[in-house]
Length: 147
Image (cartoon, rainbow, N blue to C red; front, side, top):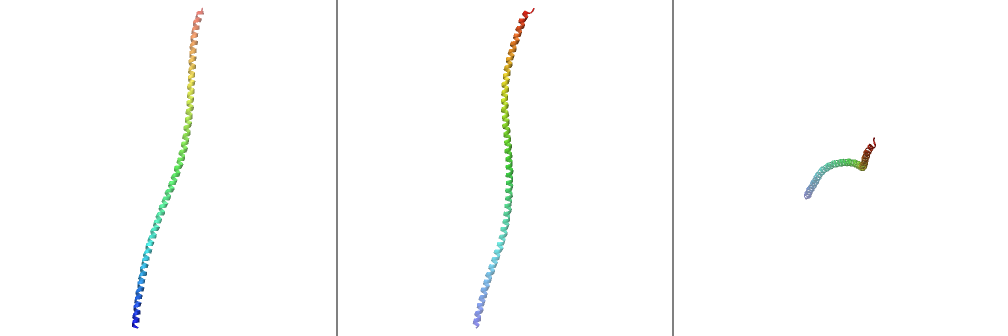
């Protein structure tokens, strides 16, 4: 019996050691799991911070895009106004060119008319000289008949 008690005691000691070993392994696994959970928590917080930073950057990009869109709209409006002004200037230039052509035509007509009047005046002047000469001759002839 003593042998059996001794065997039972050894088995009990061995079983206790085995349980102790299992408990140590479980404790080690729990500690590892605990450390992994802490690391996962830190990583989760880091990911959350990065997501918040990304959200802020995307908001800035969105705001910048909206500002660029507004600037493009403003530039488009200014281009439309410049095109409208250009069309008005071109129409004015065409009107001025038309008036200049009419003025040139009128100037040519006036020049031709002036040349005609000059020729007529020269003819009238020549006729006056002839008449004056004839009057002088008639006066001379009339003096002969005077008593």
